[in-house]
Image (cartoon, rainbow, N blue to C red):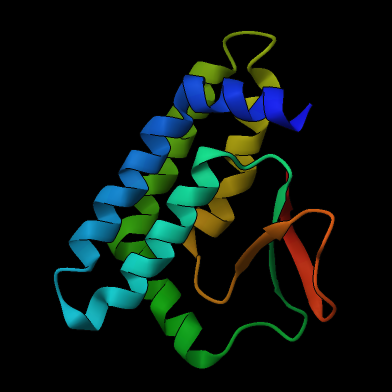
Length: 137
């Protein structure tokens, strides 16, 4: 089932979302200071290609101060625009009955799109000890 959902996801918007993440990642890698944002963007591009069967997790105690500051800067520069891309894709996907679960997955991805630092993407069946799932697809 995960494979079928990932194929439909890729066709109905996953490729375009991943392209958006790749674009922001390449722009972020232009400066040495913003390379961590580029790496986070590339990680999200990989997740946007095939999200079903994977979960976004964060440490139980929360994230550190540097991750919080990075998340604020990320949200202002790229996160808001990428979240709008998820909303637009979800609206198009929700137009059909088959697309409703995909639209819901798009909406569930928005928090990690806006604040990716301090999060990891792992297979849903192997969540490490000391981490709590944020998004499980």
